[in-house]
Length: 101
Image 1 (spheres, rainbow, N blue to C red):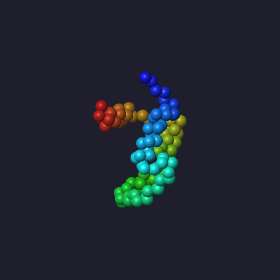
Image 2: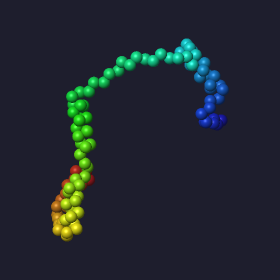
Image 3: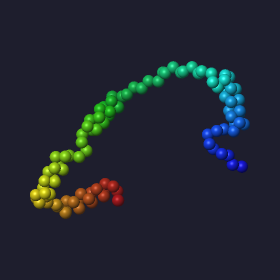
Image 4: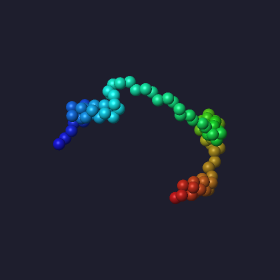
């Protein structure tokens, strides 16, 4: 047997839902319900407040050092930027080691 799912319930299912909700709550399903009093509170520790402040501070720092980018672009344009293959290989090896591969 297949059941079509389109957001409408069959009358048997709808009748069962109505009967169950009336007996469970003791009132009609359309009766207003009183709101529960809000009693929850949140207290942040000093560490949490410090972490929040640190997060805000770090968010304000640019990810890219534009001054360094400009200096490298200028050195490349002038032809004075020198690469050190041994330093690049050393740093790449260290990075791979940190990754655990």
